[in-house]
Image (cartoon, helix red, strand yellow):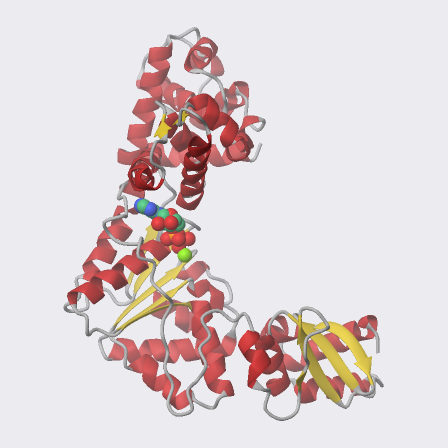
Amino acid sequence: MTRDSWGIVKQDLKLKVGHNNFVTWIEPLEFGSLDDGILTFRVPSMFIGNWVSRYFCDQIIDEANARGAGVRRLAFVVGEPANRPVPCNGEPDAAPADKAPAPARTAAPASGMTITGARLNENYTFDAFVVGKPNELAYSAARRVAEGGPVTFNPLFLYGGVGLGKTHLMNAIAWELRARDPGARVLYMSAEQFMYRFVQALRDRQMIDFKQIFRSVDVLMVDDVQFIAGKDSTQEEFFHTFNALIEQGKQIIISADTAPGEISGLERRVVSRLQSGLVVDLHPTSYELRLGILQRKVEQFRDQFAGVRIGEGVLEMVAHRITSNVRELEGALMRLFAFGSLIDRGEVDQEATRECLSDLMRTYDRRASIDEIQRKVADHYNIRISDLVGPKRTRIYSRPRQVAMFLAKEFTDRSLPEIGRRFGGRDHTTILHGIRAIAKLCDTDSQTAEDVDMLRRVLRDI
Ligand code: ADP
Ligand code: MG
C-alpha cells in the first residue's frame, strides 16, 4: 500500500464511519508505512491513535484489505516515525499515551476518578476587567451570576469574537464564587477538555464515574463550546450533563465565539437548550474602552517595568489604530514597555510607537486613503463629497463629516493639520473636536456606532 492507495481506502472509510467521525478521527491519520502486515500511521497525538485503535481498527483493516493491502494490524506513532508505536490490539499502554499533548489530561486513578477543571488565571478578576458600553451587559450578567444565590439565568451564554474577554469573565465568575463560598464545587473547563475527559472515560470504562462527577458540581462552566460542534457523541453527552444540571437547578455558564444559533454543526436541541437562559454578547471594542483598558494595563505594567514612561498621545494612538481585540492591544502595550526598558531615557513617544508597532498598525495604511474614506462615507450617508468636505453645518452633513475625520485618523497616518487640509482647509482643532465627538458617540449612540463599524468593515476590505 502507498500513500495514494491509502487515500482511496480513506474515501471508502468515509462512507463507512460517517462524516463527523471521518473528520475527527480518520482525516488526521497520515500514512506512514506498511511493513510485514503492519500499517503504521503518524498521528497528531497519541490520544487520537488510541481512540482510532479502539474504535476504528477493524474497519480500517477491513477496508484496506478489501483493496488488497494485506494488513494484519495497525500501529500509530506521534509525529516523527522514530517514536514507539502503540499496538492496535489489546490495551494501548500507558506510557506513550501520557506523552500525548492532550490538554489537562489527568491519569485516571485505579479506583474512582477525579476531574479537575482548567487552572484559573489569577489576573482574570472582575476588578481587572474594564467595563465600557460594548461589554457592560456581559459584565453585569456575569456579576449577577457570580453573586450566587438563586439561579436566575440558566444557562448564561456569553459570546463574542476572539480576545474580547469571554475567558476573562468566566474566570472572574469562578474566582468570585469560590471567594464567596469556598465549599462550592465550581468546575471550569474548555469544551475541548470536556471532550478529552469524556473520551478518556469511555476508553477507561468510567462513564458512570464521569456522569456522576459532572452531575455533582454546583456550577459548571464550559468555555469555547463551539469546539464540540460536529463532534456527535461529545455533544450528546454534553447535552445530557447539561439537562441533568439544569434540572437540579445548578448554574451553567457557557461561552462561544458566536451566538448559539450560528454555531454550525450543533444539533437543534442543543442550540435551543443553550438559548433557553440568558444570551449576551461582547461587542467589538470601542475607542473609549480600548483607551480605558490601555490606561489600566499601564498601571499594571508600571511595577514590572520601572523607569519606563509612555509619552503623551501614545495610548490614544494605539487605541485608535489597534482595533481588532484586547489581546492584541495588550500585546502591543507589552511591546512598548519592553522597548522602553531597552532605550536610554525610557520614554516611549509617538515616533517610537509607530516604529515599534509598525507591523500591527500598518495594516490599514495602504488600504484606505483619505479620498477613499471620503467617498465611502459620502456613499454611506448618501450625500455628495463636495458637501462632505464643504462648509454646510447642518447635522446631515456635519455628522458624516466628523465620521470621515474619525476614520481618516484611524485608517491613515496623516496628522490632524493634514486631515484638516483635506477637509476643506479646516483647523486641526476642528478635526480633533470631530474625532472626539464621534469617539464619544460610538459609546452612547448605537446608530453612530453601527455606522462606524460598518464603514470600518468596508474600508478594511478595500
Ligand atoms: P476571549 O476568551 O474572549 O478570546 P480573553 O478573555 O482571553 O478573550 O481576553 C483576552 C485578553 O484581553 C485577556 O488577557 C483579558 O484579560 C484581556 N481583556 C479582555 N477584555 C478585557 C477588559 N474589558 N478589561 C481588561 N482586560 C480585558
Ligand atoms: Mg477564550
